[in-house]
Amino acid sequence: MMNSEKQYVDLYADARAMIFQHGSPVMNDVRDAAFEDFKRQGFPSRKVERYRYTDMAALFEPNYGLNLNRLDIPVKPYEAFKCSVPNLSTSLYFIVNDAFHAKALPKATLPEGVIVDSLQKVANTHPQLVSKYYAQLAETKDDAITALNTMLAQDGLFIYVPKRVKIDRAVQVVNLLRSDVDLMVNRRVLIVLDEGAEAKFLFCDHTMDDKHFLATQVIEAYVGENASLDLYCMEETHEHNTRVSNVYVEQQANSHFNHNVLTLHNGITRNQLNLVFRGEGASCCCNGCVIADKKQHVDNNTFIRHAVPHCESHELYKYVLDGQATGAFAGRVLVEKGAQKTNSEMRNQNLCTTKQARMYTQPELEIYADDVKCGHGSTVGQLNDQAMFYMRQRGISEQEAKLLLEFAFINEVVDSMQLEPLKDRLHYLVEKRFRGELDKCAGCRNC
Image 1: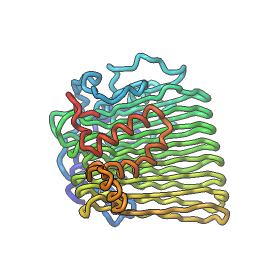
Image 2 (image 1 turned 90 degrees about the horizontal axis):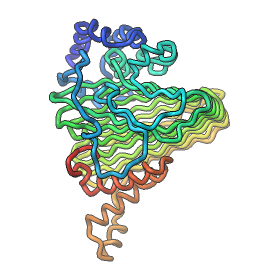
Image 3 (image 1 turned 180 degrees about the vertical axis):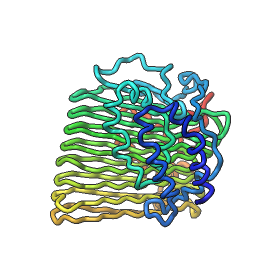
Image 4 (image 1 turned 135 degrees about the vertical axis):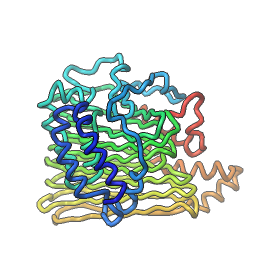
């Protein structure tokens, strides 16, 4: 056992009673099994196919502090979260580190029966509802990071939308990382949409302090029959932040899932998506937008499993890498035997604007049905010299010409967003990011 694993094994053994004391019975019921799975697997090495592009043991080796005793972190999120970005007109909630911030709730009321609240709280007040779904999709026996999160997570977010209820107003959840010392955060999110429900959620990750943060996040999303879920995950942190997020999705018949992961500023990021179709006629659109420079690292890994016939999956991930940034995309689509009439498309397009930037791409199709329409493609290139020359000839500076080409390249992903206010905001943010202005808003780092 390596030191990076041993410290978490020892931590759980020493702090188990404290973790159980502040957790809910539903979450506690699966901790010990997750602990055994973590001990058995250890952190995945680069020899593990899904983790070949990111050294996970190195990410978890530093000795971070953890708030296992649930000390109150003083923060006024509405004062801290100020920015020149246009108002998105959302129902705004905050999670401070891994704790749902009940002191700052939106004034707008949600439709009757909808729950957006602390996972720990709802697990205590409605244990039967949470236990039906919690840790069912996110199995710990196959993924050590999910096992680590499951054994240590004490709170997070629970979202429930009842049958045939539609949330017209988008729900925005701002994850704020706040600490006076280097900190590890383990956040859990459970989303349940009943039959015919519709909802749009925007998760934004921000850092409030210039400390080293390590955040693990596990999201489980259940999309019922004829339901529609839009999930946008946007990261705007800093270079000392490490983010590891595993998303698990299950779709029933005729459901739709729209997933967009956007990395605008970060340190080291590793996103993993696991999606399975359980009912015919379901569809998903999964998009990724990455802008990285300096020595930033972004690794997106997807696995879409077509287990039934007549389902559609569409993926588009685009990277713009500058400086010494490193990007990775590995996408796998599995079409199981009997999953006829599957329609699947996967595209990964990448732009390296310097000779030092590196991109690794690995699209895969695994098909066991003979009546399908599946395709994938991947490209890695540099800025178009002819286009640069054309613009320079017309009086456009080299820097501005470079920016215009980068913006045009990434625009396809931004324009695919279904949430119009977010699309407008992203055009603004992407331009600021390319101009190097993203962290220069007056009075805050959270833009």
